[in-house]
Amino acid sequence: REHDWIRHVCITGMSGSGKTTLALNMAKQLIEKDKSFMIFDWKKSFRPLLNLDSGIMCFTVGNEAISNLLKININQPPKGIAAKEWINILCDLIAESFFVSYGVHKILLETLDEAFRDFGVYSGSGNYPTWNEIKRRLEVKTRETSGRESNWLMSALRVAHVMTFGNFGKAVNYKGKDSMSIEELLNKKVIFELNALGNIEKKFFCEFILTYIYKLRKANQ
Image (cartoon, rainbow, N blue to C red; front, side):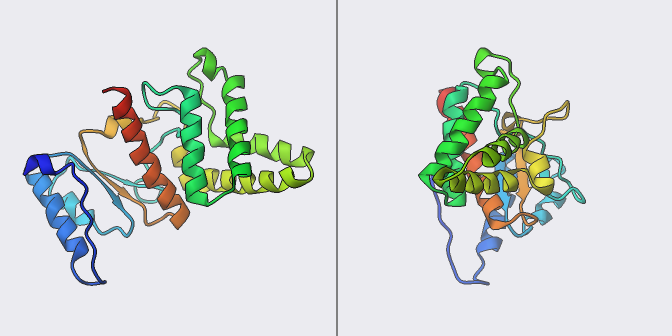
């Protein structure tokens, strides 16, 4: 029943027991009913769906050789969410995905806050810095700090390196005329192919998108 679709479902089973086949059949039924969906495809298993509906949007995140067309700035909050609230949420997501300490969380939050202030975000500039800027600031701090905090800074800098590295870094730190927003993808059929990413990147990306959607809808209820 349609009102059951938004409820949580967990599909488990041994390798080869048919989990992916079941999920594919569920997606096919959504296509038949012209319903929107969003799939996080860790192993590139859902590409056959593209043959069923030309309207499906497929993003191979982090692989420019295929379709790395997703270009967003993850530091830009959903509509209705204050910038200070958003950087807290981002740091919580990063701490969970990267398993970092409270000290690293504190440094990342302070650095984001400084960058947002300097870029005029709190004054309404709309000029959100990317993680390339956060990384640059952390590099400066690392050279100027010693003691216990220097260890936190090194860990924070490793996080920033992952967040800006390679094609994944290009996808989530984009500022330009082709920039997208998650809002544009709602009410569409979307597949995110994540097989080109490392496990930390996959985990962070999935949690980021889901948290973004949740906060967006809570803010606009």
